[in-house]
Length: 465
Ligand SMILES: Cc1cc2nc3c(=O)[nH]c(=O)nc-3n(C[C@H](O)[C@H](O)[C@H](O)COP(=O)(O)OP(=O)(O)OC[C@H]3O[C@@H](n4cnc5c(N)ncnc54)[C@H](O)[C@@H]3O)c2cc1C
Ligand SMILES: NC(=O)c1ccc[n+]([C@@H]2O[C@H](COP(=O)([O-])OP(=O)(O)OC[C@H]3O[C@@H](n4cnc5c(N)ncnc54)[C@H](O)[C@@H]3O)[C@@H](O)[C@H]2O)c1
Image 1 (cartoon, rainbow, N blue to C red):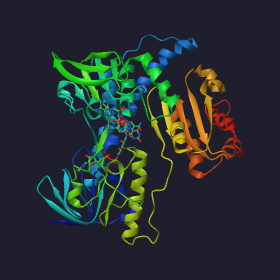
Image 2 (image 1 turned 135 degrees about the vertical axis):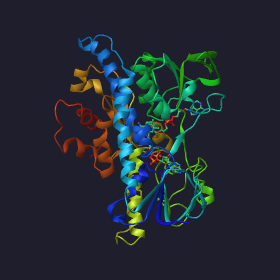
Image 3 (image 1 turned 180 degrees about the vertical axis):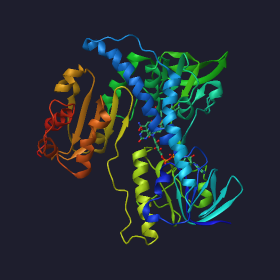
Image 4 (image 1 turned 90 degrees about the horizontal axis):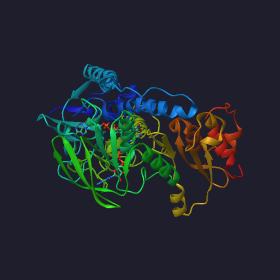
C-alpha cells in the first residue's frame, strides 16, 4: 500500500498548498472532478466573465438616461461561452499537466474516502496511507426535494451553476430558483443576455443576509428587470414537450412558472460525506462542515481541512487564506520552519455579489448589531450625492458604514457600481484598526472619483476619532 508524506484531497485551493517550504515531500493529490476545483472551472472566474457582457447590455440600455442610445444588442452565446471556456479550460488542463509531471507528486484522478485515520480508499481500488492529510474537498450544489428538480439534469434543461454556463444555446425562458449569491448573479447574466427570466425566491426579498436597505433596493431593481416571485415556494414540477411547468405557492395562492430551463441555486453543502469524514474520525458540524480549530486542525492529529468543506464562508478568498495557513502549519509540523503555527484570525470576512448593481459587504448588519446590543453609530452616503454619482446619474447606490462611537469600523454595506472594489479601503481600515477620521483625513482622495463615496461616508459618521 503506497504511503505518502502528505495526501491532499481536492485540487481547488488544495493545489496551492505545494509551497517552496514543502519542496521534495512525497505528495499525493486526489481529485475526482475537473482539475482546479470550483472557482476556476465553474465558480468565481467563469461567472464573473459572464457577468461582464451582461453588465455591458444593461449599461448600454441605461445610457439613454445620459443622452446616448444604442441599437438593441445582439448576443452571440456560443461566442461568449467559447471565449470564456477557451481561456479557462486550458488553464485547468495546463495546471493538471504540470502537477502530473512533477517528480515528487502523484496525481490520482478519482474519488478518495477515509477508511481510517490518515488512511484512504480510492474508487480505483487502491489504498493510501499518509503521515499527513489535508481535506480540501469543497462543497457542491444541492437541489430541491421535488421530483425532477433534485439535481442537475442538463439533458432535460435542469441546471446548477456547474452546468448552466455550458448550455448549447440560450433558452427562451429560464426559471431561477433561489435568492442568494448564485441566483442573483445568474438571473442578472441571463436576463442581460436576453433570456426571459423568472426568479422564484421563498423569502420576501433577495439577498436576505444583506443590510436591509441593500437587500430591499436590490430586490426592487431586479423586479424592474425580470419577473420576480417573492415569498414563493416551488411545490411541484413537470416537463412536457421540452417545457418545464413549475407549480408554485405564493402570496396570491397557487400559480405556475413555465420555462425551457430551470436553474437550481438553493445553496451548497460541504463534501464531507463524499470523503467519508466520519470513517476518518473527523468531527463534523450539524450542517456537514468538518470541524477545525483556528489552526485549521481537524479532530484527528495531523489532518487539516480548509475551504468550503470546513469553513462557515463558502468564498474563494477565505479558502485561499486558509490554504496559506495550512501550508505554513504543515511546514511548522514538519520542522521546516521554526516559526509558530499561524491562526485563522483575519476578520471580518468580506464578500461581494456580482449582480447588477454590485453588492459588497463586511461585518454585521444594523439588525444584527441591534440584536447583539452593540453600541454603534451609522451613516449612509448615497452614490447620487457624490460628484461621480452625478456623472453616473445614480439613483439607487449607497454605502452604509457602522462604527463604534470612537470611530472603529464595524461594518460596511455597499450597493452600486464597482461596490466590490469601492469597499476595499474600508475592509483594510477595519482589519488594520484604523479609525474613521484617520482614514478619511489621513490621505488624499482623488477627486472626483467614485472612491469619494467612502470618504464622505466616513466623514458623515458621528464619531470622536
Ligand atoms: C457559481 C459560483 C460562483 C462563485 N463566485 C465566487 C466569487 O465571485 N467569489 C468568491 O470568493 N467565491 C465564489 N464562489 C465560491 C468559491 O468558488 C468557493 O468558495 C471555492 O472555490 C472553494 O474552494 P475549495 O478549495 O474549498 O473547494 P473546490 O475548489 O470546490 O475544490 C474541491 C475539490 O475537491 C474535489 N473533491 C471533492 N470530494 C472529493 C473526494 N472525495 N475525492 C477527491 N476529490 C474530491 C472536487 O472535485 C473539487 O475539485 C463561487 C461559487 C460558485 C458555485
Ligand atoms: N460572488 C460570490 O462571492 C459568490 C457567488 C456565488 C456563490 N458564492 C458562494 O456559494 C455559496 C452558495 O451560493 P448559493 O446562491 O447557492 O447559496 P446562498 O446560500 O447564497 O443562497 C441560497 C438561496 O436558496 C434559497 N433556498 C434554500 N433552500 C431552498 C428551498 N428548499 N427552496 C427554495 N429556496 C431555497 C435561500 O432562501 C437562498 O435564497 C454562497 O453562499 C457563496 O458563499 C459566492
